[in-house]
Image (spheres, rainbow, N blue to C red):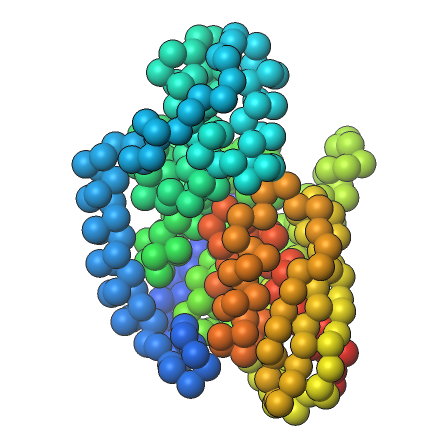
Length: 340
């Protein structure tokens, strides 16, 4: 309780979260003319989640794990093991990376084993094994980081109430941590994404503004290295993208000039460039032509597909690659603005 008294910004965030689940307009989740009720999305998502969690609980680990070869020799050298895992994610060999981590958990010793136990849940997200990741997260003591990740996992299944509760808990827990501003910003970011997913742009913008405010507070913290402040500035840019995306549904693509337009924005690891083609009053092709992302997951294929299907740059992100997904959407919006 004392934490909330000392944190008026957090009180505002929780008040905002309390309104997230109020009635919202329908959200277009398939083709643009097929409006979906958020309550129906949540109901359908719950069925999928229950089925996937039941299957994951029965298997305990991904079924492909046994057939995945262990590509490295396990050692007590933490740096070597971490490089082995991270490089495989960068090379889109997520199953091989997860295999190494599980072997470290089962057979490793010392710091490599401890790190693997902490890292496995996030790695399962990157390997597109969300139900298994959720089971792993539930085993450990809750932290602001794990609660934020669980919120993203539940949002993947359109579980708006549960996702919001995890983001609220993360914001509250972060209030007593050293990186509270960044962690709370990520919590408000998550609440904003819930609102945007449910089709309430005004509440989403309010949450994103709170994230912007929290990142601004972090910029005032003294004594951090230069690269740290650069990352915070990048996140403020992403919040602005998201706020702009809340207004994107009012953008009538049919009125835009035909042609191919190019735009570049900052991604997680470097610039991302996209080409957007408009023909016959609609977006017909979106291609990522350059990037430096190390773990893009499906963002460069799935996000363009969703945008073309819905004919709006404001679509769902991808769990585990939220920053990259937002950057792709922001680049598409920037390209569309050139066609006015």
